[in-house]
View (cartoon, rainbow, N blue to C red):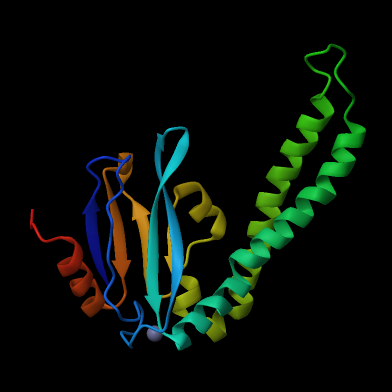
Length: 195
Ligand SMILES: [Zn+2]
């Protein structure tokens, strides 16, 4: 696995990055692509600045990626939202309203917060359980992937054979490629000036 470090000079002007016209995982010709959107942590005219990536994949790897989704972030969100609603309703109904105007929505706030926390924990537990259940089918592909809750809080993205992560203080973005050849081509396309 090779890591390519792309420096961020100005978070308001995200770099435009090019990928080789090959599957990022296996190197076969590109058949499709998956869009990733990274939050640059900056705003321009009240809008969040994002770095949009279109990651090339071949048909076979795209299917594998979708299957991984079925046992990771999809169950995480589905069970998370379900648990959130199930916890929200009784908490909201059982929590008394505050006595003053400012605390009038206290029951709603407590219900929403408890629901959200329960959803995050419950969704993560479900995903963690599925990881064990499907480990024998997907192997390393599934194990090496961080839990969705971690990706959500660290702005990291994970695809088959490829993942991204910001360094501390968003000084640069790390692109991790499992395919060394693709990593070298990506470097050649995006980092002409060697530092
Ligand atoms: Zn492929």
